[in-house]
Length: 478
Image (cartoon, rainbow, N blue to C red; front, side, top):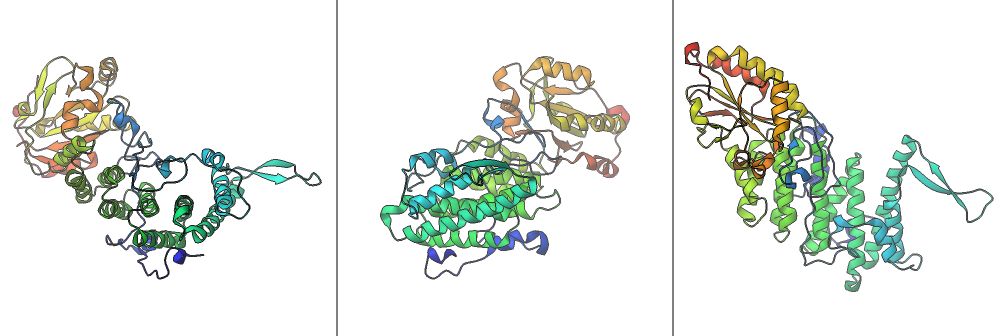
């Protein structure tokens, strides 16, 4: 069955299928269509740790945990889930389909008549909740008795495909039976939830046809009732699909990150009442785009939050991120703070010197890897006036002191004595929307930001072009 169940005449774009095929055809998705794009607030889509420049999970619970640092390319955590808008009939016993507990859904429905929509949904719930590595099979010669069979990896993969397709079939049957029955809207919404999720999962496994059908479903449901739970849920699945694809992409492949950005903004435009979900989508997309070096796309996402959602809890970090993204080409003037030793340091004290600014934390494996390169550069370009200024985002001073001593960190580091001003609550980090480490910036001898962020591999290239500075001009900043 196809999406004609939603509408008698469907002729919509196939942007998702185009996006699914991006890796092969090199095309960009059209912003005017729902594109296989993922954005979101859900923790269904995870990301693997990766080295600097790759897209790891852009939102981490650490960011909302009183200043615990999320280190770039290390920890992957799920984002907090926003509340759904109130004007929809959501699945049973849930304000938001993302918060559904499958076992609770099964228990909440009384034993239904075989073949009824309730029965079909119950079967879909069982399929979705059952572990993929085990199946129950009848015991030969023992009617009514079953045994659990452990599946091999290959068998589990086949089982996964089969279950998703069965869920699609069950959901489509329910949709066909309930789409014109207002009193059964809750069953209809349940079916859409299972259908869109199964299509998304199959699309992530490489089924371009399911990606196209997911797009058609979303467009049909939007035209049917753009304020409905079903319309929002289907559209959100498309956003999630693009996010997952972006997070799995190689650092050099920016197409899915760009698609994610466009779809996050399209979701915000099409569903103006979905303020929490839209803001989370845009924040996630902006951070993914930053990791892929798509600064214009990231800026567009953050600007949308700034303009559309002035009451969003993300406003402070968004304003800071936009301030940071606009730094290149500007003179850095607002950058100062107390040091670990109890002193005070300001960027003004570095006048006349190129400066490498380092946002770091002791628990960042990537920073530990980068540290010898920074120390080598500091030694190599000392005669050119290079200086380093650190901003530490740890919470415990003992940890910082121990790290500085063990690794012979020679530069000044901004670190506040007030525990409430540590971690990502560090005022300098908050002012510029820095929520992960390590991050590097490069200033020229006039205090103008030349790169933010800086790829350390390009530091030599800068000094190859920069004018030579007399060694006598080098001084230590106290």
